[in-house]
Amino acid sequence: MCGRYRLTRADRLAEKFDAELAEELTPRYNIAPTQPVPVVRANGSRRMIVSMRWGLIPNWAKDASMSQINARSETLLEKPAFKENFERRRCLIPANGFYEWKRSGKSKQPFHFGMKDDSIFAFAGIWDRWKASQGQVIESCAILTTGPNDLLRDVHDRMPVILKVEKYQEWLEAPASACGRLNHFLQPFDAAMMKRFAVSSAVNDPENDTSECTQEVPEFTSTQATLF
Image (cartoon, rainbow, N blue to C red; front, top):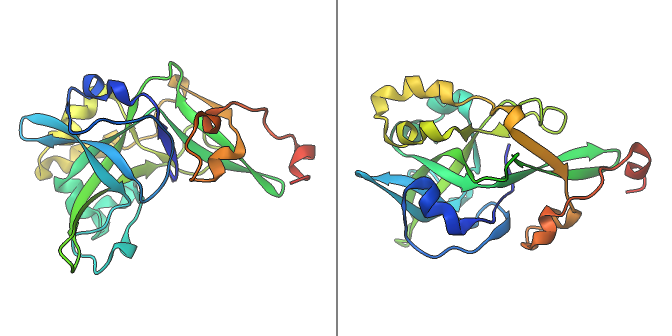
């Protein structure tokens, strides 16, 4: 799964995704579920970067508690909460790193994963628009996940789907009838293009949203792990 990520180079989003930016963004080091996140979606012939709630609420949901932050790519067309969105409401969710936790003894070691060149990339996402009984409209999104690549396999059994730049346009604009050919996009990203490192336990608390969350630290040894 993907339960936490960062976007600390927000100033380059419009250039990177050839999109119009709806509002000014600030660096984020520890983005957590239910928070607003920048999302790239197609708007006719244009791309727009808009804010959405991370945690997709299906348009037919009775309340916001039915939200999900991740969607398994293998079963998109089988789940009522995701099928229509995969067919008609796909998006890109920008990031330049994400976190996963590896159990070490009685503790968990957080790791940061990103590109070797620290560049911005995009998760494959889907989105929806939900209207509460009081009339409030919420647009929300979910990150698609797939099996792990070699860099993640010993940490977690899932990873977010990261799209190649040359696939952005097709992902955003392909019609519902072409969803079948999008399935081959939903594969583990090339581990040779990525890097990982252990980070400070500051990232464990979603209230912490500072550069301390991305501070590289030594990995736990088996002896250290028993002390926590």
